[in-house]
Structures are given as structure tokens and as C-alpha cells.
Length: 137
Ligand SMILES: Nc1nc2c([nH]c(=O)n2[C@H]2C[C@H](O)[C@@H](COP(=O)(O)OP(=O)(O)OP(=O)(O)O)O2)c(=O)[nH]1
Image (cartoon, rainbow, N blue to C red):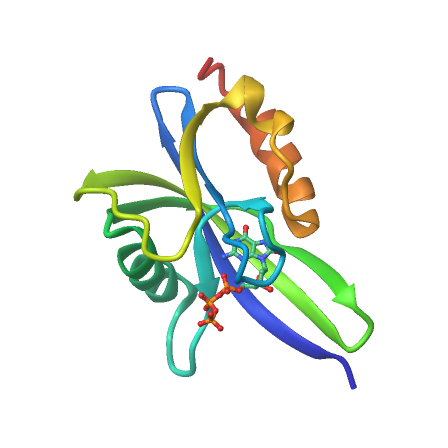
């Protein structure tokens, strides 16, 4: 039986830049870039999870704007991840790195230059399409 883990992640967009986070050496998928977030806990909605995770990991308050389509990805045969992305904006707070090695506000046009976690690639592609389609550049 394949175990499915549900993970939320935040695409925090600010003036054409997206907050991109690099996982630390001690995390799973070391040094890969990701949209910050984490696993949904019992009795928690995806939205509640994301707001909690972003506060815990980065000390930021966020507002959720829109949910995008999830991506289901397997890094190993016995486990799959449902990665659930949300377009967000920052409501403030002093950014503090509590778990990640690094974060950058990356131009949407340069996002693909980072070495992303595999599960993020379809989400990244969808978001970039969405961004240019909306004429936000
Ligand atoms: N947060 C996040 N996790 C991702 C992304 N892409 C991706 O493959 N993952 C994977 C890495 C992990 O296997 C899993 C989420 O784990 P996590 O370590 O971020 O979540 P967490 O903070 O709730 O974990 P934990 O340390 O409390 O167990 O999803 C992404 O963009 N954001």
C-alpha cells in the first residue's frame, strides 16, 4: 500500500518576484529549492497548514489568494507526495530562516535556473504559464 503525504506550499509573489527557499543539508532533498510549506497535520485544512508552516519556518504572515492544481509525485515506490500549491502574498513580518539554508526573492523569469525539488517542476511550469498569461510581467 502506497502511503500518500499531503504537503502544502506557498508561491509568495511580490512585484514579479517569488520567495524561493533552499532546503538545508539536514532536511530531506538536501539543497533543493522549493516553495516553503509542509505536511498537513490531522484535523487541519490545507490553508491552516500553510499559514502555520510559513509562520513557523519563516516568521512571515501570509494571505492566501488562490489554490492551484496539485502535483502527485513519488520519490520512492512506497511513498507519494501530494503537493498542494497556493498563490499567496506576504502580509509582513521579519523574515527569519528557521529551517532553510537560504531564501531568495527570484524574478519569475529566472525561477527555472534554480535546482528545484522534482515534485515542484510541474507546479513551477503551471505558475510561470499562469503569470505570463495574466500579463503580470
Ligand atoms: N514544503 C515543501 N515540501 C516539498 C516541496 N517539494 C517537495 O518535494 N517537498 C517534499 C519534501 C518533503 O519530503 C515533504 C515535506 O516535508 P517538510 O519537511 O517540508 O514538511 P514538514 O516541515 O511538515 O516536515 P517535518 O520536518 O515536520 O516532518 O515534501 C515544496 O515545494 N515544499
